[in-house]
Image (cartoon, rainbow, N blue to C red; front, side):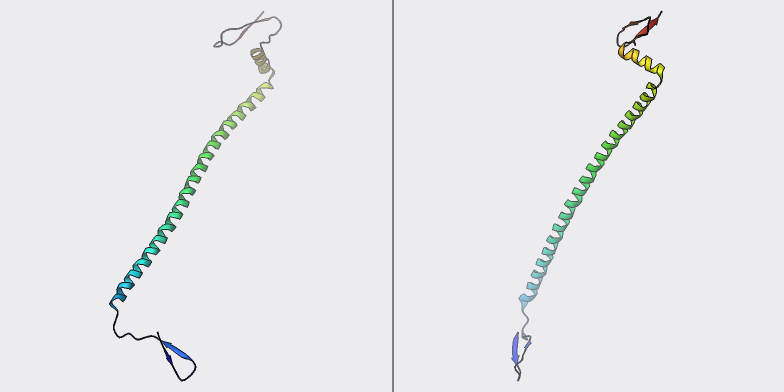
Length: 130
């Protein structure tokens, strides 16, 4: 840039006029453009890698959560089944005939005049009344 002074205290900057075009100027521009494109490409690749890792982690967390949900649902099904069985047993224990039979089988009690025989495990206990 060339500074030209006018008759005042203010100087005006004006571009310097070159007489001959510089042949290295075009090559330098190409190199600068290639460097800029390379830097933009590298930044873009870094951003893609960061987001890719985040998406992968999110997918892995989602898959783990689905697995935990499936296991929890299986446990819930088993607990509901167990609860239904227990409710059935409670309702049966209110029936006196069932309760007597249950006590005889489990605790080997007998009524007056009954004889209890123990058989192998594959055959249930039998009672004979006199």
